Structure formats: structure tokens, C-alpha cells
Amino acid sequence: MVKLKINLYRFYRRLPSKLFKWLYCLYAKQLSPPTQKQSRLIEDLRSTFLTLSVEQTDSESVLSQTWLEFQKALKKEVAEQDPRSFLRWPVILNTMFPDDPEYLPIEFAVIRKDTEWLSRWKKAIQETSIGRPMPFWRYRNSSSNTIHQAYHILVFEHEWDQRINYFDQVLEFGGGYGCLRRVIHNLGYNGSYCISDFPTFSALQNYYLLQSELPIGNGIGGTLLLSDIDQFLDVCQAAKGKVLFIANWSLSETPFELRTRVLSEVARHCTAFLIGYQDEICGIDNATYFADWSASIAEKFECRVIKIEHLRGNNYLMGWKTEAFGKHTVK
Image (cartoon, rainbow, N blue to C red; front, side, top):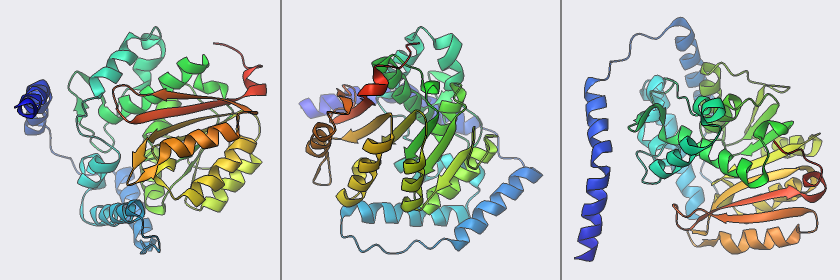
């Protein structure tokens, strides 16, 4: 009986959003023929995917096999569907663009109440038509994932009392389709940016960011997209100035050997980091792993674990190099 009441409560609480989604899809305009630029980007995306081989992994872990299936599904969608609607594909909704998550009203309320809502965050969460994202029913100018990504940065900024554009370089491990990159750009960040990801997702990021008028490539204001982990670690080792490492629910889903390689370079070369993770996933004890790693770098970094109350079992691990934190300028 208790479980039934809980399910009924959730159903009625989400009924307005479900009704909005139904009406929005019912009256949404059909896609018009692609422009010359869109046709070229679609052709480039499909050509790139044709060259990519999604190979069977030697790893027997559930997570490795799951991400392999996601990549196969994405490759099939790119070949058969119109990429102009990619944010409505099941594989994207299951991995990068949650459909009407229960936590969204909480995160949006926090962003909306921020003192810099009008001057910064309203622009930061402004959605585009790229990928045909489903609007958030309480604020149609944005969408679930854009709000979610902005919330990560807001929490980070408030925790350290520092804006994202304090940094000279951002290194992101696992960048989804590029949404966080666009949000950070909207917040006024003009430094260099590098994303490490699977080749399939790097290709999707390239498609999305080019449509967002964000330049691809190395250098100030550009986005370097890498699918070779050794190249990403080389960039990390060569990083200069103030460097931020971001890995939201990505590093926590990789094998220990790989995450240890990445984090060893983060500890050596980065100024600060933001890592989102689950306490446990597929039998992997992330809570203990990240607690041990934080303890191992305690002499160089001030580390903080922030429990995400509205996402039970999930946390942010944030750190700032002690010598840099002592010198950084407050807003």
C-alpha cells in the first residue's frame, strides 16, 4: 500500500510535465529541409561514423559492455535518422539527456534564485534548437540537461567563491554531446577547452559545437576534441596557467587502471577539479575509491565531498590546489 501511494504521488507530481510534453510534440512543427550548412555537417558526421569501428572490448565489466552497446546504438541512429533531432534519440535520452528527471525543478529553483540570475545564469541556460531538445515545461527557454550542467558549475563556483572564467584551461573527461562546453562558453569563459571521449561521442560533439558556432581546435577559445587517452594526458601534462579538470559521472564509470592514470596527471598538473560520481555502480565502490584518492593528495589539495541531497547516492568531489587557492582572487 505504501509503495502504491508513493507511485501515485510521483505520477500526479509529474503529470503536468507529461501533459506539456504530449502537447508540445502534438503541435511541434516538422523539420524543414536542411540548409546547405546543415547538410554539410550531417554529411561530415555520417562520413566520420563510417570510418569508426565500434569494436568488442576485452573487458568483462558490465559498464564497458554497456557503453559499447550505447556506441553501437548511436552509430545506427546517425546512419538511419536525421541528426537534427539527435537529442530525441533513445540512446541520447538514456545516457546524456534525461527525459523530465525528478531533480530538475530543484536545480532550476536554485539557479533561478541565484543573485546573478539575470546577469549570468539566464544566458547560461538559454537553449538552442540544435538537436531539437525538449523544453523544460516550467521554463521553455531551457531544457533538462542544460539546466543540469549549469547546476554543476553553479555549485562549484559557490563552493570556492570563484567564477569559471578564472581558469585559463578546462580539461573535461567525458563530454556528452558538448552541452557543458556550451554552458561554460555562455558564462563568459574564453580560455582553451579540451574534451576526451569515445570516438563516436567526439564526432557528435564536433557536430553539435560547430552548429553552436563554437570553434573546434586548439588555442584560446577553441575546443580540442580527443578520443585518444594518451593525447589527452599529453595535453594535461603540457597545461599551463590555471587548469580545471571536470569529470561528471564519467571517470567514476571507467576501469580503475584508467582512472588512476588520469587522476595521477590531474594531481600533478591541474589547479582544481570537479568530479561527479555515484557511491556505487555495478558493484564498483566509488565512495571508497575517491575517498582514498582525496586522502593521497591532501598535502597539495583542499578536497571537499558534497552530497547531492536531491540525487541520493551521488556526490561532487571538488578540490583546489592549496597554493593556488591561497592566492586566487574572490569574485
